[in-house]
Length: 215
Image 1: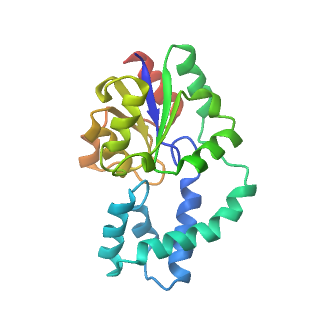
Image 2 (image 1 turned 120 degrees about the horizontal axis):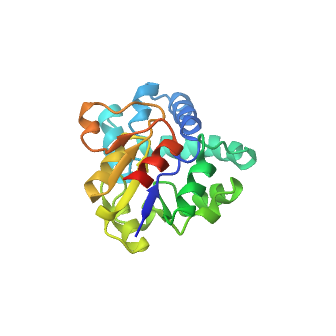
């Protein structure tokens, strides 16, 4: 069964740079001395892993939740009224895949309520057969749980599914599950190690879609 699973922020939606802006703003306003590069580590990172990573950077067990909660307070009013931007060729690529028999799913670190809201507001809801949040599984990315569960919900093994991701934590999650991973870099390029986990580094979703059709 032809199946493709997509990350949300930074892959389908051009929202990761917005998240990064408000992560940095929240950290600064709370007095944490963290760089923009530090916050890149938290893209798609599951909660338990994020707490440990933030403790490494700050020495505090509470820093991650404090910064995250304040980031939400700053960002959520903005997102309610925002015309949420899509990454290039999203609708065209998803249409091409659907027209050629692919079943499509979302596998995201974002909570289900927010994901459903963003997909509806951007006109993407109708493309997807399943929408899976990492909140539905034990461990978030980069653990394999979300992609294993998403594949199961789609009725395939992970090895049968493509996974499309923009950031290292998502790539590792999909690769550890056994998916064929395509990376479309958003804010950072894959390093040499990450290249070992992907079947394609694509410039955009249309390139990824055409690759999946020809695979």
